[in-house]
Amino acid sequence: MKITKICCIGAGYVGGPTMAIIAQKCPHIQVTVVDLNENRIAAWNDKNVEKIPIYEPGLSDIVAEARGRNLFFSTDVDAAIDEAQLIFISVNTPTKTFGKGKGMAADLKYIELCARQIAKVAKDNKIVVEKSTLPVRTAEAIKSILDNTGNGVQFQILSNPEFLAEGTAVTDLLFPDRILIGGDTSVEGQDAIQSLVDVYANWVSEDKILTTNVWSSELSKLTANAFLAQRISSINAMSELCEKTGADVNEVARAIGMDSRIGPKFLKSSVGFGGSCFQKDILNLVYIAKSYGLNEVADYWEQVIIMNDHQKRRFSSKIVQTLYNTVADKKIAFLGWAFKKDTNDTRESAAIYVADDLINEQANIAVFDPKVEADKVLTDLNYLDTRTADKNKEKLTVVPSPYEACANAHAIAVLTEWDEFVTYDWIRIYNSMQKPAFVFDGRNVLNRAEMEKIGFVYQSVGS
Ligand code: UDX
Ligand code: ADP
Image (cartoon, rainbow, N blue to C red):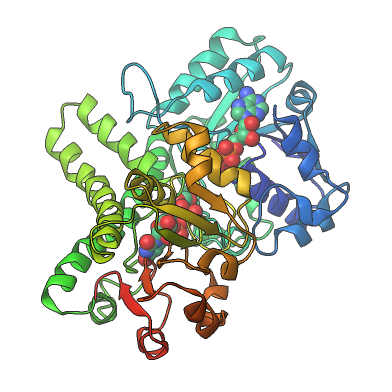
């Protein structure tokens, strides 16, 4: 099928940037991104392109180039489905918070609603592409809904997982390590795969486009994220041992990373990984394994999460212990709230859990993050449901400058590795703080020798 019109359902962190790049690289294809959330669509359409709802380096320029030409953002979901030959489903798939699989399985409610809407609206054959991370065999469920509730038209379901990392989404999309497309082995399935290959081939060389069966593609996404998260939990496990033995985890990481079989990436010890994918995908993997009775497989992967939770809790405990076993009514400055630098996304950020622990110890927290909005910080904390929103507001404030966050603080906790943190006037910060002035560097971004020379009591993760 020759693709001239694409629809993407879901204008979030995946759908928005991915469609912006497809539109930029394929000016002959009309790309419409739809979402039920009117505010989000209005923000994508904001005249001031800097106000698009997702912050990603380089993204606003690409949106400025393609928007109105062949890239459109709309709330008219039905019209976009009707027109398109190719429909990406890019809606959220949170971990279930109720019922069977609670806290582990993915909630496929939004996916199912999309499938039903496509079935209702479609009047001609369509290719439907799973873009959200999904449990293995979701494609089968989508197919069943489409085939049984549709208007007699033919649907081909493809799995095309997204491997972009937030903060580097534009580069990852422009220069992907690989594109993975899973489809049916039938002639129609292979035709559908080829249609999607042809879209990507506009900017990705064909040797980087892998085609597989649907289930391999679905499972590969979960596997990739599980392996990446496992590396972080592995190095974080070593960080605790380093702190006890006098080894330095950064030196250990460098030493093992030079082994070409191990490689240097994803060995940065930290306060713990966050983000919308790692935890959700591993829990999903654990749930799938358990549902097949593969308890050893499930337990093996669950340790990655257990280690990550431990690392977050260990960080907050260390702060309390070091501050003479009490942080009650002390001011702790948080530098960073996002789950990593160069994004305004805070989903599952370690900062949320560290703040929650410290507020349980009655600390007062002042947060500064260069990109995260104040409302978001409090919403994240309220979502944990540990205490009332009023209490959270009393104990945590969000301030517009790092100097304000640190003034009179007993300690600073670095929760995100924003580049700008190293450029601050640290002498000024030191002079404004209570003494001894502690810094707990949860991202190992500051220079120990320089910090200690100024007078800070500096603690990193893993040394
Ligand atoms: C991840 C995958 O990398 C991506 O391929 C997939 O499509 C979605 O999930 P993302 O969550 O956006 O991407 O960011 P990533 O760079 O993987 O970082 C995840 C978390 O791990 C962050 O909190 C980051 O700070 C942390 N991290 C990463 C470490 O603590 N140490 C590292 O060495 C690397
Ligand atoms: P991701 O990181 O996977 O992109 P987000 O939560 O950022 O996740 O984005 C998912 C988007 O999908 C949200 O903006 C949500 O409003 C949208 N969405 C969910 N269900 C539907 C639906 N049935 N139709 C249209 N949009 C939907």
